[in-house]
Length: 314
Image 1 (cartoon, rainbow, N blue to C red):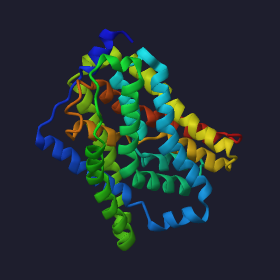
Image 2 (image 1 turned 180 degrees about the vertical axis):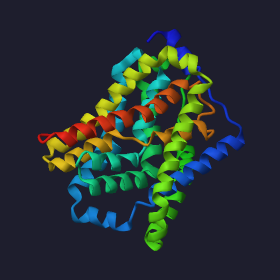
Image 3 (image 1 turned 120 degrees about the vertical axis):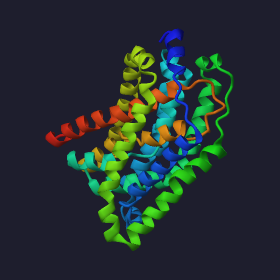
Image 4 (image 1 turned 135 degrees about the horizontal axis):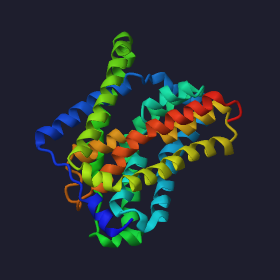
């Protein structure tokens, strides 16, 4: 990617007033509450009974994916901008998306394992998302040759943690409590909240791109290729972990989908609905990578699920 294109991409900016930011945060809190309605405390009990697949899946998503993403960002070198690299790390630091449960069902995978992994990665994301983004983001800015083009930035671990705790921790706790003490109410609310989450994400993507569509269209081929490679890495990572450790076929399929489907909507909220990145230079590269990831992983996830559905060997 030429420096001119990188500058054009990074210059994309979406600004919001306090009211807009608060609205996004409130809606995300409702979305995460809806995700938690499908989380039952007994799922965590099951982990200790048959922990192997769950532990491997959690490691693949929460530990290996951020690490391999960091390596990929370094390997891509000057083909990406520093902000695009941070966008990749941000996505890899997010928990799994709840659409993965539907895709696991379509793929004839282990749906119970999928739900458990989504629940665990979402619960642990209160700690793991800020830590992974802070650790690998700052490490990239320190060691990458392309990061010398921008002033040194320090990603604020405490600010990211506080924000994610408020956005995720509180609604997740309320959702799990509702699921446990009011199971009938939780069952009725689950599907409407899923629809809200999809509409919310699409609205955020439109908001991100519409005012900057000219700059985005100039760079789409680069964004498409970067996200394609990154998503393939995530899917291959989950499949490889399942294969190396000789998990059952259904579990291997679940790990593939869970590692390849990320809650990039959370990444968008951190970019659009908070002031965490106010001290950064223009960071449109982070924005477009995160938003396009959310579109592309639905396409790739459905494709992989369909292949699994019709295959007897993988």
